[in-house]
Amino acid sequence: MLVDFGQPLGGVVQFAYTVPDIEEATRAYTARLRVGPWFVRGPFRPLEGVYRGQPCDARLSLARAFSGHAMIELIEQHDNAPSVFLERIEATGYGFHHWGVASADLDADVREYVRQGYPVAFSDRLPSGPESST
Image (tube, rainbow, N blue to C red):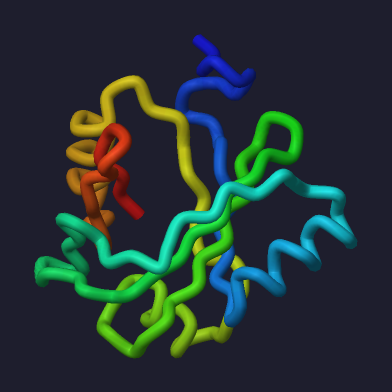
């Protein structure tokens, strides 16, 4: 089964990267890779964000664009609040953060990942739609 934009269920649909400056990064991706248009949200704080079992109050901006069938997401954290994004930045610097996988039943897929030993590092309920987990 394919999701509406051509990617298979269980396949990678998103590549996400942390960046120090979201506006500069969107300009660079557009100029160098011809990715765009960009849809930017933020700054905002996750409405129901949970980071490693604790409320997440990080101030974030997200930019999303498609390159063919794949979504590129850029993430800027504007503060030093504990988060899955700051955790990665402090460990390895800015750059690749996660990929998103197409799911027909997110709750079941998350339960299966947890059963396999992968803890939920971050979750939030998007105001525009389904819950997302990283």
